[in-house]
Image 1 (tube, rainbow, N blue to C red):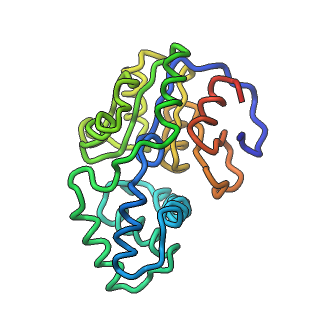
Image 2: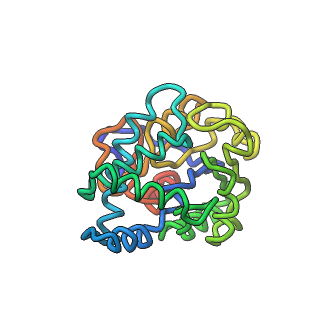
Length: 241
């Protein structure tokens, strides 16, 4: 799926750089649903997934404020609160209890432990096309181990974790580091991510074109290319959509 805003034809890039969380990697929605159901909430895996998709759009408005870190405690708390709000869970004591469970669950990886269903095929298609494939992730130092555990690491030529390199998206410097790793110019790369303010605007600041993932069409018109999933994003960047 392409954006409603007309775009010129883009040349095929030499490098494709992906976000990790909510792009190549998903939260374990089933674990979240099971925990919430155990607390008496009538939710299921699909409902949690839908709530998360809506929460990330709300969170983006917060992240548009300069120097707001995606990895701060406040951001993680607001993100969870938005997810729960879309599930109808708003009681302060209940929200705090769920937040405490989330903080203690499976450190340091937490809930980010599932490969997106389209990730392996999408990465395989990128590599078969002869392109460099990499990751830029705002993370706590665990993203490489997650990519290894989910079987995606062999498809990647490099992984940049913000906690390791000392700078996070949307700072242009982390995108410039990725260009150095890929050995390409900014005009020869494209970035694929799920947050407009962090991924699209961050990549753009470094001169990199970007595709925004919007599985349910919740973002509305955007001044960038948009895809419903990784398969669609790869088709767009290869000029086959």
